[in-house]
Length: 148
Image (cartoon, rainbow, N blue to C red; front, side):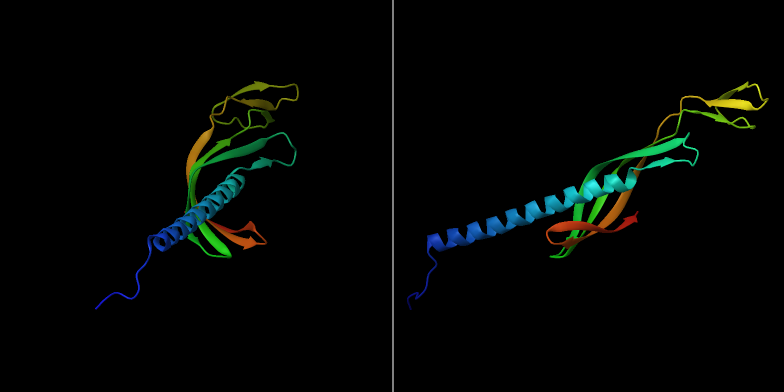
C-alpha cells in the first residue's frame, strides 16, 4: 500500500514558523503585562503623607524586583510582584511637651521642650502582592491589589 498524502518540508517549516510567531507574541504580551504591573506596584507602594500642619512628612519609595504573570486572559490578567519598600520619616523639629526616644531636647522661651529628632534611618522592607489588571481598549487598568 502506498502513501497517498505526505507533508512537504515547506509545509512543516511554515507550521513551525507559525508556532514560533505565536510563542513570541505570547512572550511579548506577558512582558508588557509584567512591566505595567511593576509600574502600578511601584505607585501603590510608593506614597507621600503629610500631616495637617504640613511640618511632618512621611514618604515611601518602592522598587519592584520581580514580576511574573500568573494568569492572563483576553480581558484580564494577574501578576505576582515582589520588591523592596523604603519608608523614610521626617527629620524636622516638633514642639511637644514629651521627649521622644532617640531625640535631643532644648527649652524654648515658652517653657515647652523643643524636640529635634536625630537622623532617622530609612526603614526597608520587602513586599509581595498579586495585582489584577483588566483590559479596556488596549490599556491595562488596575483592578485590585492583594498583599501577601
